Length: 168
Image (cartoon, rainbow, N blue to C red; front, side):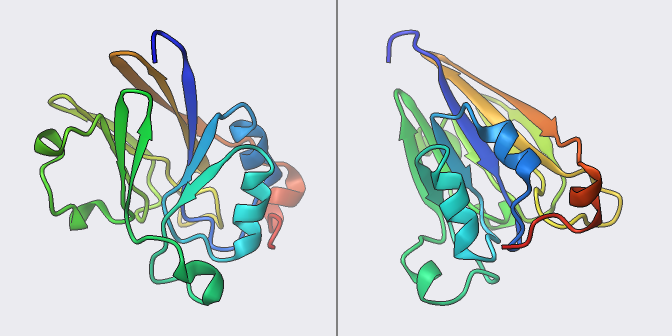
């Protein structure tokens, strides 16, 4: 991978809603990872217009469109290995022993970046319908040889998007 920069967009808990602000925030991604609760295949179609997409399915992702999606995934980007699951409390393996660089999850709708030893844990929050007073967010991973950094992007919602967003 040399020192080439790879940008991975992270999105979760869209629940059938794709906001133009989320698409804008993910636009320069080389890869987009959806951490579950997609809600509608049109969300994946919109994301695939920006970059290749890896997605997992959970309880709200039903129907034929979701049946081919895994419930967790291992995504390799250069020398980095990223473990994707929806609910972090269901992590049933040792990420260090597995050789993961990062563990990304969704479910809580709460954006989090936390380093635990050598492993980066990232929850991009929710880009879907607002839940309680939590912000509407996505995240980005910047991967270089030997480095993995994340940042949360709080979406500045337009008036239309604040009211109802764009349901697919």
